[in-house]
Length: 91
Image 1 (cartoon, rainbow, N blue to C red):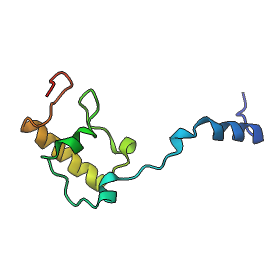
Image 2 (cartoon, one colour; image 1 turned 180 degrees about the vertical axis):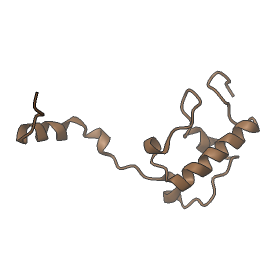
Image 3 (spheres, one colour; image 1 turned 90 degrees about the horizontal axis):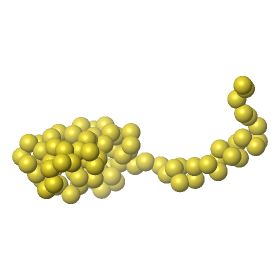
């Protein structure tokens, strides 16, 4: 079956995702952060999913430089028991 094209298809496509057109931006660049601190658990919790996994940069919009720092900070905080490894451990 051929792919739908034309004006009707373009209108439908534009109307489908009005909420998901938001541009992603790096929170750390906007705030002017130079180093991500492992002791700032409130910020780190925003980048951990409910299952305990670190949220990837493609979903959060974090730049790769800060994503690497974030990854290290979360792992350090977990090692020092500031953050849980899984969702089963309620802090």
